[in-house]
Amino acid sequence: EEEHAGGALAFKAANLGENFVANARYMQVIVPPKAVKNTYKFEDAIALLGDTVEIHPEGYATDKKFPHMHILPEDMEISLQTQEATFTDYKSGEKKSLRVLPNHVYIHPSGYKVRVSKHPSADKWRLIGTLAEPTFCHKPSTVSGGGKSEISKSLEDMVIHGPIF
Image 1 (tube, rainbow, N blue to C red):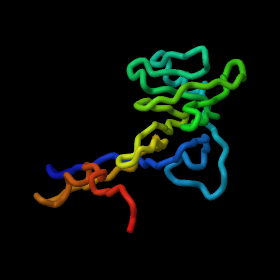
Image 2: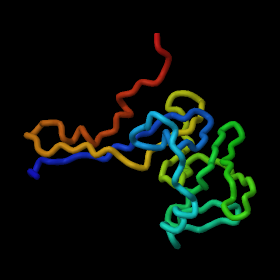
Image 3: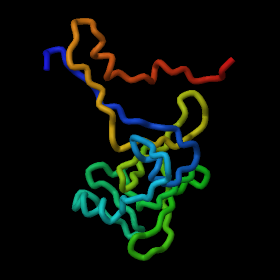
Image 4: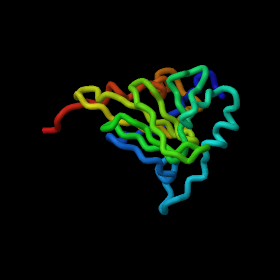
């Protein structure tokens, strides 16, 4: 690598609207042509995370270091209309719910993250889904002024929100 090498990790995110239903097909980097079965289980995620999470009696877990991050069972559904995340308790098999809040992240056992976000220019809230696996954008070398620092800059200020004429 040269002195001028660099890059960024880019996580694919999508506007999910007001409702989210866990679907293994769309929580992958490459969308398979046919529906796939979810192979990620809440119990496996909890075993992997160990004592870094607190398991709640309602059947979900919260990260101890980042209390705004919640791990939900694999059948999670989120609705902004009811402001609830619903799921099946992995121990009792009962349907449970959790209040959905802004600035909190709801994580599927696959690592797929869902968060509540306010639209930048409208008085509307929406769900944003983010893949767990990023794309690595790497520029191995460049000359001075070759645009390497542009790779890691946000594109948010390049998007204009508003009506199209």
